[in-house]
Image 1 (cartoon, rainbow, N blue to C red):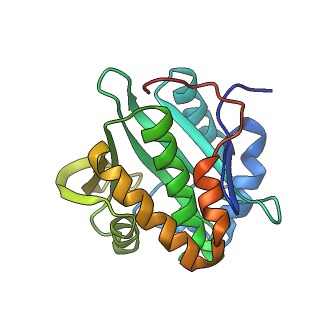
Image 2 (image 1 turned 135 degrees about the vertical axis):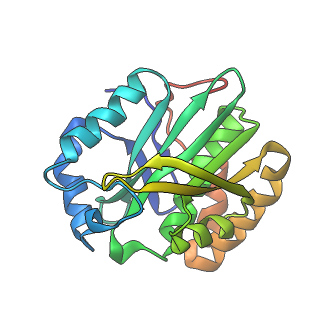
Length: 218
């Protein structure tokens, strides 16, 4: 048993990523052949081992918490997400590395997963800032982040070099601690509208298991 957090909502569970998840990740990414997308890094059968190794190395170093996204009803792995760029001194981090199988995109899954991550960041890790970064060309991701209630901050030019050599401009958003109460209530209302009903509030009251290995500021 590991000591990393498992975050559990009404219909989604975020559990720690492990080396044994390679096949599950490739299977989830094959729904839509997501590794072909030009604006993000999603593992294929050829790259999944390195993908997991980098994520778990970051976890060992204390800068990252990578999760497998599971549909509770079927126990199927349907994507991944992570907390990373964890800065303990300044109590901030980034939510990123997020992707979902094509058939689960534009459903309630993203809202619930991001709610669990934001709640954990602000209410358990006591963060003062949570940021999101995406490719300026990824309109779907940009709109999804705005729907969460994050504020647009600006464009970071040549923020990273992609696998094909492209110099990527990224767009950055954030939620700060003073905004969390409003963002939380808006997300709960959205989850209720998406069918979670009273379970959404129950998830808000108890959104992670007792296996908590990270306490205090990130």
